[in-house]
Image (cartoon, rainbow, N blue to C red; front, top):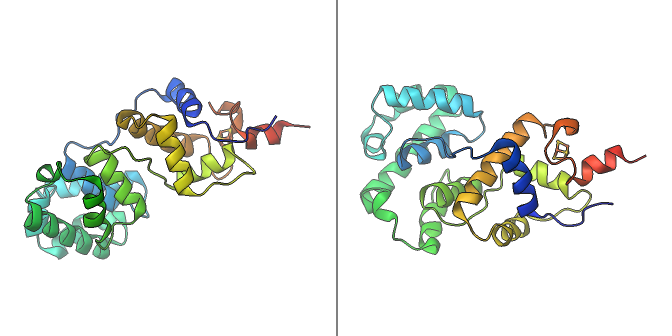
Length: 222
Ligand code: SF4
């Protein structure tokens, strides 16, 4: 029988059973999360890690230091992350905007979510996915991050039904009772699943979602 709707609580339970708590976002500070969320656009996390190491070597991982940095130096240090000149310019301008207007990310913690969306959403280089990551991982607001992994997995789980990102995100908030910790780890687990099982060509036999996934059940039906 095909599963008509996505039950995020059920999917998360299966993912948690396989992957456990993945402790995302992998960063030491909020500034590093923000830098990583910009660098990760259009590249692999491995490359982001190398670029962040280069920034740390030059003491350029805080927003204050990035705001004061030479843009060409920044660009050379993050070269491995691709689109490095564009990313350097964006890191520089975003850092300057935060430091000059608010002082630091920590000082922004009491700002309400709508105001954070207006502030970050208006910046070049911060699209919907990056904005949602910032809200969830830095400001601990209940948001489901939709990225290419979650889209691919959830569209297969609900196959042939298709829901818009917004509807999926709202359902996830309700199913996971707006728990920030669960939403963080749900996103992390979906990324892990997308990297290891639900690739372009899915490996359903070992996937922890094979009994909850319409695509897998459709493949195995005679
Ligand atoms: S069962 Fe297959 S299609 Fe479904 S989520 Fe897992 S790998 Fe993807």
